[in-house]
Length: 85
Image (tube, rainbow, N blue to C red; front, side, top):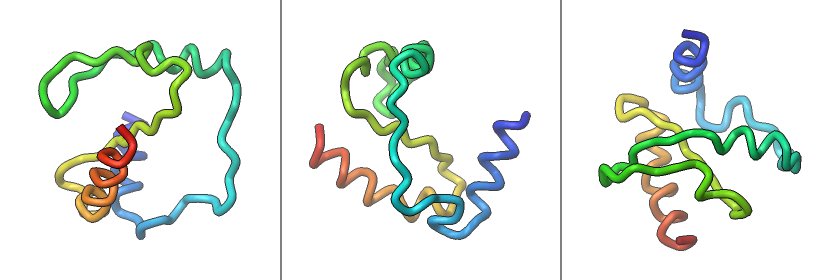
């Protein structure tokens, strides 16, 4: 329930709110290994295992089709994904 509330709150805020300029990425291999323990389904309907991302630079974009901010960001995210397969 807390995650759902955070997602709703995030979608209700202005674009870019809550981000930190110049924030450095985390480089904790042990924490990253735990975070890769998930499975999901892609937009194309294929199964996806988080462990397949091990050792690869990755962006996971969590969104909702009803979220106006997400809808606004979608074309840019799609363009970035195509440019960085």
